[in-house]
Amino acid sequence: MSAADVAVCGLGRMGTALAEALAEAGTAPVTWNRTPGPGAAASPAEAARGARIVVLVLFDAAASHDVLAQVREGAAPGTLVVNCATVAPGESRALADEAEAGGLRYVEAPLIGSVPKVREGGLRVLAGGAPEDVAEAERVLRVWSRTGELRRTGPVGSATALKLVANLGLGLAAAGLREALAYGAALGVPRADVIATLAAGHLAPFVVAKGERLAREEYGHADFTVAALAKDLRLVASQTPGLPVAHAAAGLLAR
Amino acid sequence: MSAADVAVCGLGRMGTALAEALAEAGTAPVTWNRTPGPGAAASPAEAARGARIVVLVLFDAAASHDVLAQVREGAAPGTLVVNCATVAPGESRALADEAEAGGLRYVEAPLIGSVPKVREGGLRVLAGGAPEDVAEAERVLRVWSRTGELRRTGPVGSATALKLVANLGLGLAAAGLREALAYGAALGVPRADVIATLAAGHLAPFVVAKGERLAREEYGHADFTVAALAKDLRLVASQTPGLPVAHAAAGLLAR
Image (tube, helix red, strand yellow):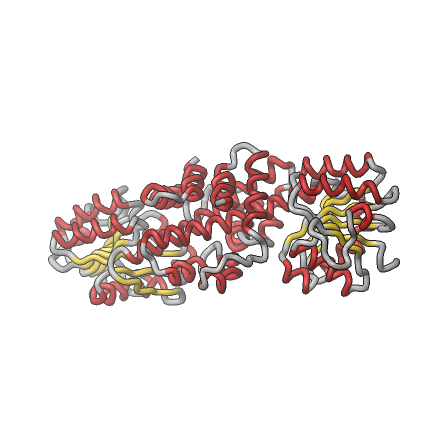
């Protein structure tokens, strides 16, 4: 394949890391970002022109719709759109319909893992879509997950559902940690004791992963932004009744 | 020391395991339980008569107050009360005051770990109280924590504070797991996929620990009852403002 037959639209921290990983693997992609940068295409349409696979790495469904509409203007019929955003299953199916209406194919490929995981090829990638489309998407997805996991989950909607389950777990762990720290402070327990106690308990993986930052009370440069996590929890809580903890956690993390 | 200088009041699953562990270690305690059983003392006063250490293993502060009042009727001056209940720090200080008013000494010793941990001596024990009282309590506490951890946390109130921090973490992990399972079911994700996804994420220790039961959808014989966990979360949420996730989790687990 030529070096330009993959496009990556969206160069946030994750999109940038994904594009860099493809370049290192010998598939330097055309890129586009809302804020123009050196070497990037002027529009999603231009990025998609000549690409066989267009990867979307955007914040949510609204941004995915917006960019997909522009991709459609430049993409050749049959171009494969691979959407890495965490969206609701229904939102993903709507995006797939929109892609198909424009003669494009669509795979949802939400990613579990953060920027450092991309660098080591250790992402867990969930892939939902028609089997032949997922098989084609694998040539980019495997670059990011060669030491991680690439899982075919079924049709469009199945991978995003599982991703939201995972992020619900992550979000509740994050909310739990935040409240336990607040609670410990309210009781006058030394912060180091709170962290040590939690690190020996059931929130351990999250606490240990964040331990160094926690000790410095440094939250600014998280690998996975709290804003994105709050967005995912809102998505979960707003679309499914009867999830009071997710609802409370979404509110807490949105503060 | 004689075989009868320790009493254990409260023979729930945990109290029974603690008493058995003491017996195995050569310190068979006098026991008392609200529901009379073979070989048990007729009252807390009778159990406390002649004991140097009276261990309370009760559900909450109300039960602790009730039994402590009866212990006072039989205990010799200077008898050491070791309270293993998870109560609020303020509740524990009130119990200490009550013990002291009756000429007794008081150590709070909340336990982290469940019945199987008692059997292997692997509990984590937090001990709060006057240093000389904690030192004396250690002869029973070490039996339960010889391969675990015995931690002196400071004055009465410090150990219960840390225990509630730990149980807040545990409770939020439990609530998170329950909601993630409900959410997965609402989305139509196969239950095994939900569990596998969570087991690879930040709720992993809890999910893995509960994995076999989860797969069987069996919740009845938990090592640590959900009722006790709901009680602790209520304790946390009701006494400290601004903990929306703990509040929601308390409600969820109380269902």
